[in-house]
Image (tube, rainbow, N blue to C red; front, side, top):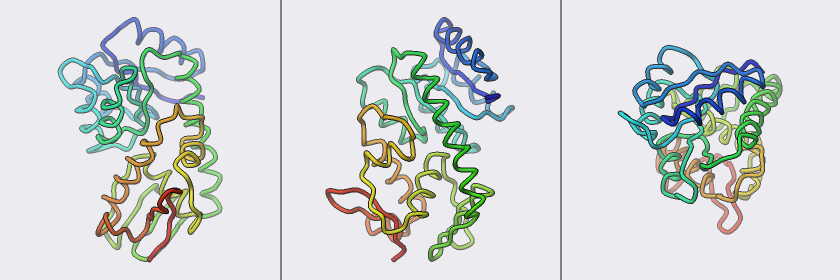
Length: 230
């Protein structure tokens, strides 16, 4: 696969195990053991995916995620404690794209990364057919992965961009949260549809003039979400 992965965790045995397993898949793996080291690593090198633990010295995972989002849209998967719903939601709120609960099976980690990479390949194929989507003042450029409202650029995370592109390329089609998890996240997600709700809310805050009365991303109550330019 040749993808560059940064693993951030202060438990060195966990890092060693993840690194060994991912390197067996042909990935290039770097490691960081505290929050400051992680932020500096991302500033100095471009990564495809970051596996980021919540509990870290110096800066915790939420602070690291927030800091990285100021300059990068790299795909971030938070590693959260099993059953700690608040950590999962906070991670998404701070800009993470996804999460995996600890303790985890390394096979799940590899499957998750492969799904992300597969999604990237399929998206690249689709982009050749439709390089730009325009709806009202909203413009989505697939080549540059940039989104504009009028002349103002909107900074989206990788998963926010994927979600927006999917909805915008299928206008007026209503998708349930479960469907969006399977289509946009591309694997059988472990049951937490709130992930979609958080991403939709973040998208609305970024692209809507009035998030409570959206112009682009609408809710079909009891069913799901759809895209339509009012």
